[in-house]
Image (cartoon, rainbow, N blue to C red; front, side, top):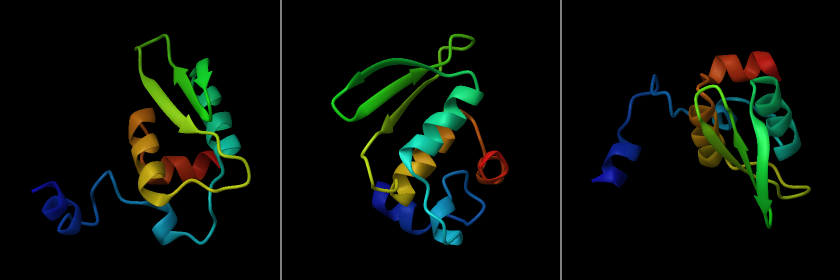
Length: 94
């Protein structure tokens, strides 16, 4: 059922992938910088995954810190959703 939902969702979904509509890819460093600007602090890092937490509301974001690789579209959309942003807000912060 989850696969059906992913294939048949509307384009106005908050999970719309930002990389599908734009040609530029986002790297983990840029996403971490945006997370810090939004009040997230690096809590810990295990391997290549950095965990950022915002103390105001306890929100948690996990960013895969793979050097030299851009973040995949679905992963990026999930991270953006966890940050509490829309796709347009992310584009403004870049």
